[in-house]
Length: 247
Image 1 (cartoon, rainbow, N blue to C red):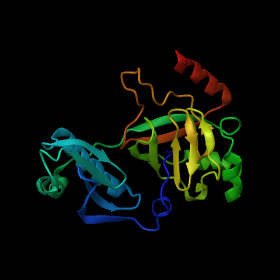
Image 2 (cartoon, helix red, strand yellow):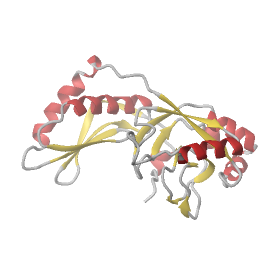
Image 3 (cartoon, rainbow, N blue to C red):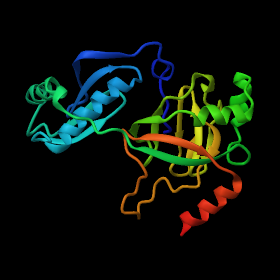
Image 4 (cartoon, rainbow, N blue to C red):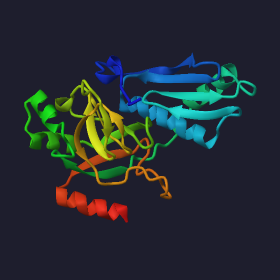
């Protein structure tokens, strides 16, 4: 299923960073640790800091640690550990976060050819807000977008920082197939489709870059915590880059 935020997440009126994490059971082998509410860089920075520490020293019995916008999900082996054991370890790390240095975010530039056959919904976005196509492109390319998390399909980036002037609802009827590299908008989110898949986001452009390539030494162009900077290019530039990507 394509990523879709609920109303509270999609158009948050308020973001909150908890003083202390909130712990919730997730099934019979999961512990969800929440650090705040809403989509917020401070909340996500804490998530990334905690994840960074646990990547270096995974507690016994923990099979996987999954970061999201505002939480960490610990998947564990009930035969080895449990929430009563994990919670004090997590609290100890949280209490010492001030000593952890977060590496500055890397900025990854993504060339995008906007409109036309690559961005069939760009007019929808413009009409919703009384904007020209050139203004939509300008607003979309202006920010550096933080990658809060990567998921749904391999390499799909959940980005924060879209200008409010571009907030546009998803399509009422999703497409059966969205081309690889498509760049879209849904509510207050913008993102890219690394592989062809069904989807209901408003498509405004496409990148010629191979976002996800399993045969590369580094299959992904970016990771959670990086920043994405979209750069507009012409159709000719798109074709040139596309040919290079094909090798």
